[in-house]
Image (cartoon, rainbow, N blue to C red):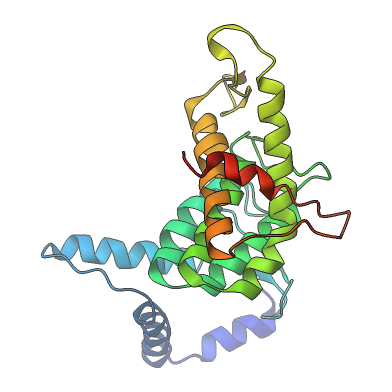
Length: 246
């Protein structure tokens, strides 16, 4: 911290600064969906969970669109730069905390930031452990964001990288169909740092259920997507008809 910053900090009137900070974050929490149960400790935990999550992003710049965000999921064992755990941020924070409580614009911004910083040229979404589940979990989170917000403009901004992720997942599923025996159709990939590749149920759940749910919701909410004329963003949504009865 610079000397100027230190002097600014020293000049703060503690009681007023504390009161203003509490009001800012309390007002932020009150704009979202509320959760109240008889056990006060549960209510406080629920508020604290969202409060700490709202404070997590590290912004490199102002509030403008496309600014770089660090979304480390508060995991100090792996550093605080970039997005080391995309599924933790996309599914457990952006969907389960933000979207389910009405903070859809925050969720959409963070999903876009994850794609910008983590998506590879072939559509796969990488991260610290390069888990297979990162890529299908992004499709799932984008679908949930649109389902809950109805924000078509945000959906259209997220659609190109989502379709790239979808193409990568579908190719992995096609390759898995070549296997024989009980693992036929199961995609091998890493789940954690110690055990290497495997046919983990966590990965399969997002690869099959995740992309199927995403496709159904895209098709239902936007009625029917036509094949894009942009060759860089091929639309593979005709596959959705295969999962309509799933």
